[in-house]
Length: 130
Image (cartoon, rainbow, N blue to C red; front, top):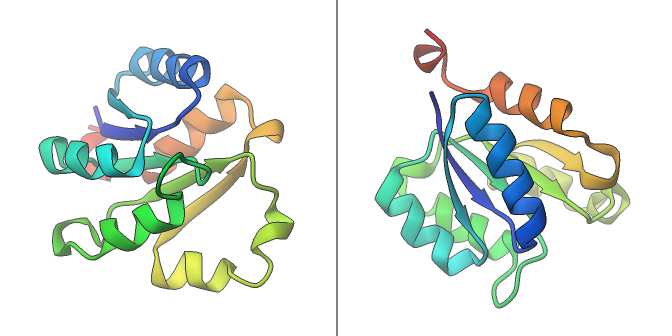
């Protein structure tokens, strides 16, 4: 069982993801804001983060900068699941991947729950899969 931090401002989608992830055996904490997610990460020490980039207040990118500034969270896999099309990242994918440690990008309109669950499973530490 992985501890997953889900950062998703859409309540309906967050609930749908929550149900699917908990049904798959994971412990999930939902946050709607970047600042709330930092506090949640401190409480649960997540194994995987699922992040929407479009957040109210601070963006997902701002969250990543702060999240990665803590040594304990520098190697936590981050899956970006967003409505922001990949074309928007053409100039910044290197930054997202190399500096901010984004492990995977999923474009929500083209991602079903099965794909999300398999992507999460790919990044769950092997010690938790036993």
